[in-house]
Length: 110
Length: 126
Image (cartoon, rainbow over all chains, first blue to last red; front, side, top):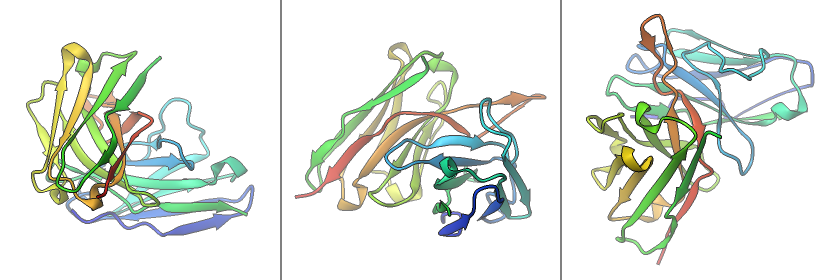
């Protein structure tokens, strides 16, 4: 049950687009379309941003989008805004019926 | 308002036990699988355990090695986590989280945690 691999940090300027990767294995990300993404601001609980690889819950901005290729899922944020600065986590359902999270990525808006 | 409220955290000595509770309100608790997720200070999220709607299925992170037990009481709209043989590395904020179970075309999502509590801090220290 190794954690999914995410870059420790990414950055971008307001208005730009950034992409965060989430790499797993054929037993989790590669085998299921059950990848979700979460946004967490300091001292707050995580917020679901994307589920089932590319679906947005009601109320989440369409600037957030998700995709997957093989064992790697990606979260793209377009039109970066100051309030997007936060930690982002992916998770995936696994073949053991458990859940595994990524290590998290700190997004800095320059 | 849809809400999850955790309680039961605190300071406990290594080897001790603690029982966390999560009170749900504003939704049909018995219709959703539930989870515990923890976050050590300054670290990332770690999934701990999940339980199905009728408690038939319970899953745990391998790292727990049988020390934790998840349970629920649908009549009381409550989720629990019994933690035994606690270690310093169990120090974390513990969140309960609802599995959204978004359904479309006959299939439902898994591991999409749409509602989270505010968390309860567990500190294991002598």
